[in-house]
Length: 224
Image 1 (spheres, one colour):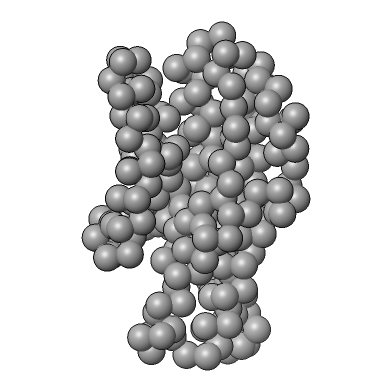
Image 2 (cartoon, rainbow, N blue to C red; image 1 turned 180 degrees about the vertical axis):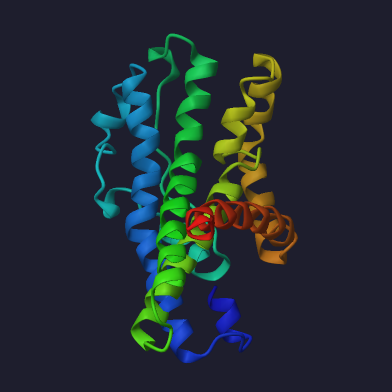
């Protein structure tokens, strides 16, 4: 995001809207993402998120500052992970996967809602109004960042949510062997982000998802 501005791909007004959108994601979307993890874990019998003070939408309970910076720079990042204790789950593998999936799912739902508002503005309002244009861009950026967050978090590399979802189909021994290298996987993840190797495939997948959501949200307006 900010890299686009540095490269001169955005004018000042677009840059300001982009920063406001990113900050909205950091202070609203990421708390919802982490709250979703904790809420599902609690519903499945684990009291740990509640004891750790993570069943809240207070952003300061969830923000990871390095992850927030990555959202500003790359469109994807992370918050402080919600701790869960699988010993409380009736079916540890399944329930851990459901808990992990709740975060990216919340991003997809928020993106869908943002794109629905985006489509409404696009089809109803007059773009000669500068304020309307900025509101339009705001919801567009919110949708884009949320989809990038969902796609990024579904990558099956520890400690991302995708690795916990992968646990459903992997044998316990193999999964715990992978977890042993979580520290190195995190370093690898940072390296891939820094070099941009990971950005291209994430952007490709995210664009397909965004186009699909846009197609669905445009349907009611195309019909009428």
